[in-house]
Length: 102
Image 1 (tube, rainbow, N blue to C red):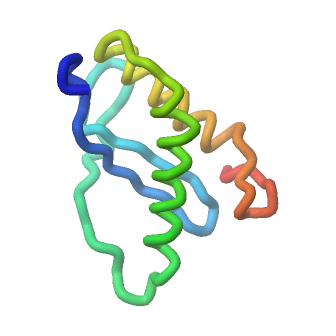
Image 2: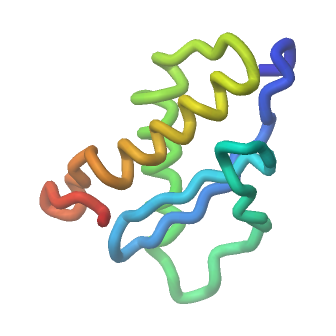
């Protein structure tokens, strides 16, 4: 990641009801708009939110980052966009009884 100057941090927002996920790497280019994600703590009373976020991070590591290689910066951006689309529109969400997030 460092050698190819890829982002070191990932910001993610996930709607716990629908399961819809947004990834942001703080990058602006012609293919991806920056969501301007800011780090915020999970509000009190949302006890399942942290577990939900952690399960998505584990899934992304196993199903995406552990399997993919990135040739260059633009390749990284394109592949993460495809992964986000796949997660939100194609991959069944088993915690939601196999339904898709959208």
